[in-house]
Amino acid sequence: MMMIDLSAAASAASAAAEHLPSFLQAITVTDEEQFQIRAIGIAFSAVTVGGGTAAYFLRPKNTEMKFVLSDSEAAAVSLVNGIYDASEEDKRMTERGSIGRTRRQLEADRIAEEFAEGKDPREVRGKTITYSEVDLNFLAVLLRAAEPKQGETFVDLGSGLGRAVLGAAALYPSFRKCTGIEYLQGRTDLAKTYVSRFRSSPAIELMTDDFALPTSAKTDQAIQQADVLFAYSPRFSGKELLSTVEKAKSGARILTVDRKLASDGFELIKTLEDPSGDLNRYRGYVFRRL
Ligand SMILES: C[S@@+](CC[C@H](N)C(=O)[O-])C[C@H]1O[C@@H](n2cnc3c(N)ncnc32)[C@H](O)[C@@H]1O
Image (cartoon, rainbow, N blue to C red):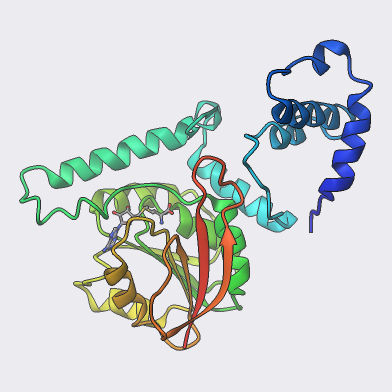
């Protein structure tokens, strides 16, 4: 595990800060707390490992890094990030995430608009086809808590552009299969272009269907047989989600974000704060189907 002892690091950095050139020490003097964090961050990165560490300390001050990834988890996250943000421009960061992410958001929104065009609003599930992507670091710690075993299967309920499906596959190559179920055909089509760039096990399948009201027996089967189900669900209807995961077999783990399963058919194994939750603080839950 790549562990960082933050208190030791902070005191080392604090000592180093005293030796900083004065122009660095005086960068931010208006907000005492921010100044401390920034000065410590700059000093720490200057005397230790450079840019990456600086980025950590220069995060907004309400950020708490509660999790560290193992080397293999970090490598898996970076592999998938590299598939989705392939060009140097895609990788460039803005306040809302990478440029690539903003592009994907626009494309996902365009697909939803195209789908809605000319349809009765009641037919368009506007609330739930909203697109966003889970932070793969968060997915990594949620999956770790679910303890996937060799040969198990993973299903993403509402898989969008397939990023969490690929994330699960890269993080746990020991999964036998990772499946995504997505309502909008256009998103599944786009997801397949990313998945085609992933050249590793396990098997990946992307289906276009409604996980709550499946039109195909194959979708139902994937849900019933899944060992780990994931729902990045801040906007999903609680009723829909519950009726879906109630089909899961006993022992299946269900990972949800900002949604507690209000049923005694599930045991809550773990609650986790989103480690990157600087702007939006999410809470993840890991349940076991009883
Ligand atoms: C918030 S996005 C999450 C995408 C992906 N899981 C990720 O984390 O990158 C939710 C996705 O679920 C899809 N969705 C919503 N309700 C659905 C349903 N009943 N059946 C299948 N997909 C659904 C939406 O169209 C959207 O693409």
